[in-house]
Length: 418
Image (cartoon, rainbow, N blue to C red):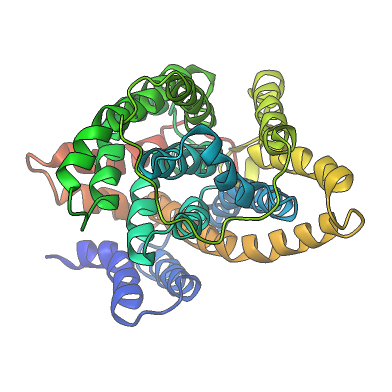
């Protein structure tokens, strides 16, 4: 292993050591990783000064894009908590089916996919796990099932944030559709949920057999619609796919199709005492979807370049603004503390979004420094090229994206002046 390669991978090594061995907070880990890469860029690669500062600028604006998504998602979620929307959803499950297997799949599959599409960042599991405990499941079972539900839709994250930010600066038009077909594995996720919630039952095999058609149908009902709505944009597969799937499953459940013949009741505890109208439960989500679609269609292509950030294009359509626009009027009209809830939600959103923003900004700058380190006065290849060049094996397609990133930002590639 030569020195250049060792230094190229040193940021990854430091990150893993501090996170897994020293168990430091993620913000400290990402900050120290940034310090190391910045030092190497200046002292070893001798990156051009303009590119050094431009890398910081681009990393900041990439992180700012996702900051608005996190901010809006948390604000919207806080408003829904004030309205008691989420905790009342479990109450309404009994009106569709009293079978605990059906209730779990509706909550942990459809509702959790929807939460991942709207809020992301672990929110789905954090919300659904307590609801499953309320249905009578042991905490460990609830965590396992909620983590299963927070799986396939993660690739689209909060309104497409992983693709939007992870492929920033690249042509990722084909990525959402490709990701949706890979997500066909989601067809079997409800089956695994069924296996988890029946563990320890004396008649487990019989209970699985009874609910297996419903589990498979639930997988298909989400996966197929989510793949079909991809042309609308990466913001919509999890959101609209879960809503269409849920509508299909609720319809077939009401018609008695593909549901277990024997009703198995759970040991529900702690369900909320008050019920709300369907309109109050559905309207916030409906308004959000309308605003997302209108924003995507009307201002989606609009953007402006930031020359001093390597020509980074900042999109005028950010899903976070739709979350804010949907949550604000609802908080004012329906909030239990109409004159305070909006302000309190904004404060909490800013506080909770700041940490992820700093982490993402630090790592984004590290990536930009690695990509642009090849434009230097030392004559060395970039860190990404050194890493990719060391894996010229049959596994090269796995590492090729690293090299492709360097090609995109190579001196020959068109870019705005710094």
